[in-house]
Image (cartoon, rainbow, N blue to C red; front, side, top):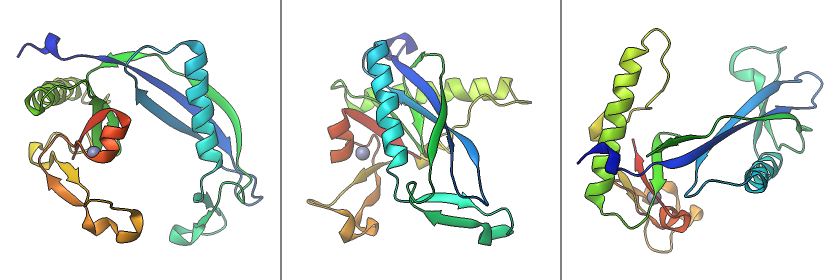
Length: 196
Ligand SMILES: [Zn+2]
C-alpha cells in the first residue's frame, strides 16, 4: 500500500504551566498535551479543549510534590491538586501537525473510520518505519521517541472482561490481544490503539 493512502489527521499540542503552593516545594512545571482530532478545530474548540484539560489537572486526586529538603524517594509526597494549592500560571499552544498516528503513554492511537485491521497495521508499520528513519537521521538529538513501538512483537490490543470495572482489578485485562485495540474504551473514543 502506498503511504499516501493512510489518512492523516490534525494533531494539536499545547502546554500548561502549573505551580504548586506548598512552601517547601514551589515547583513550576510545564505539562504537555497532544491530541488527534478527526477535523481541524476552530479557535473556540481548541480553547475549550485547553479548558477541559486544565479542569482535569486541577481535579487530580493524586499530585506529586517534591520536598527539596529531602533526598531520593523520601522527597516525593502525594496529595490532591487542591491540597497542593495547584495553580495554572501560563499556557502556550504549539503548531498543528498532521500525521496518521499520535503517541500516548506506551501506545499510539488514530481515528477509527471503519477501516479493517490490516489497514491499521499497514498504516502503523508505515508510521513506525518513517519515524525510525527520522530518528536514525537525527541521532545526535532524537526528534521522536517510539516508546517501544519499534519492537513489532510488542504491538498488542486489550480485551476487557464483560462488565469489567476497576474494582475487579487490572490483572483481569488481557493485554496480549491481537492489535489493533478495539476495546470498549477505544470504541467510545472513536479510535483504535496499538499498545507497545
Ligand atoms: Zn482499546
